Amino acid sequence: MIVRVGGRGTSRRIAKKESDNWTGDAYREVQKKRKESAKNKYISMGRGTKRVKFGDIAETSGRPSGKGMWVSSGRGTKRRKIQ
Image (cartoon, rainbow, N blue to C red; front, side, top):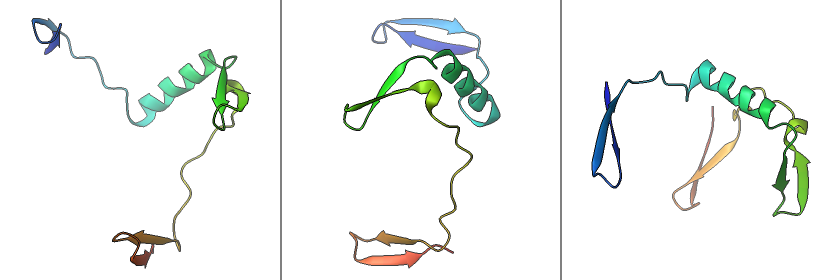
């Protein structure tokens, strides 16, 4: 059970805790469902100068490796190479 607070803290209600779906494979499935339902809607890009259909955006596959890149630190005065 979980306590939900509403109305600027003046009301409280007890509810069942739902399963978390904001990380991992469960969230990925939620994202795919949302994208599929909104595939015919337009989104604006480039400071509002372009419009692209949401369904035309390609699927991404992971994050690129940062190996061999330089990372600055200390207000830009130092740098280190990612191994």
